[in-house]
Length: 429
Image 1: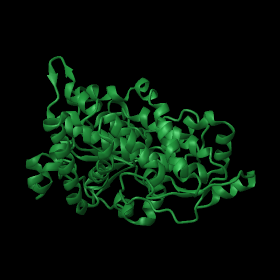
Image 2: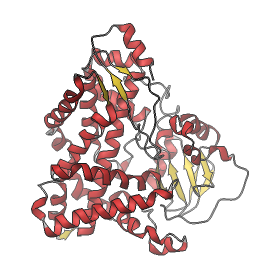
Image 3: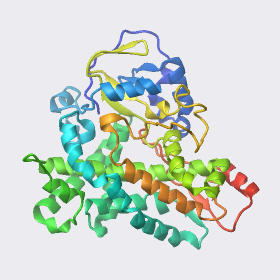
Image 4: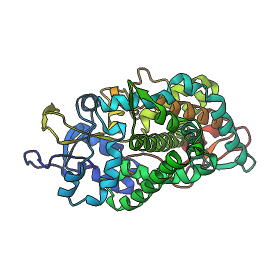
């Protein structure tokens, strides 16, 4: 949902097979990198007539977009009315108050107040607790010799951690996770699948009502955490409105849950698919932080982000006009051979791995320290299990094109294994 001008670039023959709409094809969604490679090579700044947006795929061009283009891309009520989309006003009203859809100074103000909950020092203090949660999840399935990394570990651990950070009661967390998962569809999928909007509207209504009830009627229902911190925060006499607190609580809840869950699942998959990397990690667990960074580059949880041109920009031989939409494909930039040698190879010893998975500059994800820590703990804990194998079941990716993650990842484990068995385990899919 991007407030863009309807002005299209001068017409010329374009290869429509390069459009991002092709991610609707399950085969392309399962492996989007050949499409990204073609875009980068053939038309690195490509006008997508289906999305009415420019698609940018080279690393340096994506950085330029993130630096120079506007994040304030949510349409207002008048804009929605001109498109006949008045029903989406409730979602737009919430998105407009979220910091990721703002430019300074509004973005700076809210980010400064919210980011205090996610400082590296504060996150590091959670290490022991996150390890306890992870250990308990693995212990629950250990005797069976099987687990689904996604449903048994990658979903419940971040859901528990992020709910505790927000001060939400334990008994409410399962329902809140269901709501935030539905709400996340707005950010990842709206431009491709508008049919999902009713479900997202319902989730947003329920979440908003939940927070309003806790804030207005039962403030004691909330434990000390990000929500109460935002309510109490004051900057030179300026305080956030209730609407701002709720909107950005929804953002940090969904962002802290969905992307971290995906990162944990992608980390397990990528390491098990690359037996040489698995062997190195087991021999030297100190490489696990570097492995997570390489997974972020290699299988970026967030595939793309949208911006609006704040002014006319010349990029890749094209003129992007003011107020035209731009899709910055982070996953394509993270496999740009001009920036990363041998980009399609997983290499946990890769040097100068400045990927764009968490964004860039002012909009760099302030939840990155927490996501990194949870993924590191999850991967290290999984690697303690002997004889890890990927199940033979086919992989099924979520059909949310904006987020690259698996619906499930069954694995088996058992007795200690030999080097040859590690090779076979990495080759299984």
